Length: 402
Image (cartoon, rainbow, N blue to C red; front, side):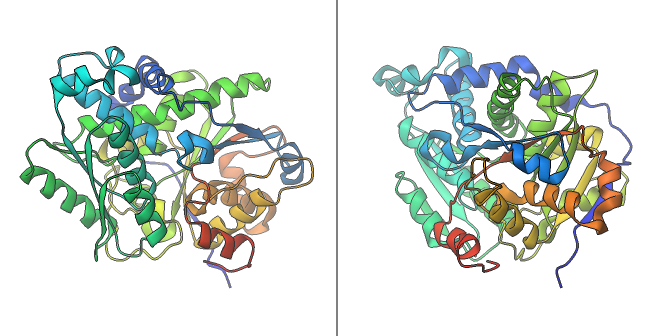
């Protein structure tokens, strides 16, 4: 029998909310303008699933499909590329608005700035984004990957010209390895989307980069005639994406923000554990984190994001693997009339959770706590496509669980 989802309402004491300004709309606009300067830039699609919303008993369901992002099959490149640009801008005494793609990739800037080596830890998508951006911006990248990472994800990163290895440790240990290696390397820079005391500037820039996706979705909702979502479901590993999306919508609709629900892999549910403890302090999950949701297998929260989430999120959910599997299959084969979405394990977890809540009696209390009903307009982000194609086919085509 499947393990149930665990959930907790957010009753944590509020902080002074000092980090909400990281996702101020003016900061996100800078990131958006930077991304728009790339020749590869296009808005990723927002899919309205009309038949699915009817089936689930909701007014509207929207999925932002990040499998189309810069040809990289995932959203992560938005953060890494913007953080690199902000770093180079700072080092050369400029504002990032003065460094669009054509300037960043120019011979003149290469001569002025030279070359840095960007270090990061990743399960795949973030590292591929950093490697791709470093390649395009004529910089170096070194990537550490945790045990259990597939060869496909390793090779995707190496194809972008980065040095990459799979280590015999978990993600959080890889973060420490990347930080230690950067310290020993001349012009070594850590580009990590998790923050800790003393390392907060670059994670803030990465979160602002993720804001491009939220801002696009917000605009695209208007194109569908949806003034604002009533609910946003967002997945979390270290929480940077969740904090970015929550931060954007809290700043965008300060008087009437959408209800935000955060979904984690139950084997790495550090945010859920922090919310369940209820004192406002973050919690850490360590050891092996056996989950198909590789992008969410992170046990140490981003301190900046945590502060935003504890002040604004409504409910935290710890989801077993079957939730992601359910989401992948339903999005791949939706009800006739809706556009299929190729969503990977981490990308599909929020939709799987939403579908379970709306169709399974055991989650009636959770449905009521979130306030989901026939008037709800729900926005979700499919953050990756089939980044591990073999596993994707095994789950969606072959009916396997991993």
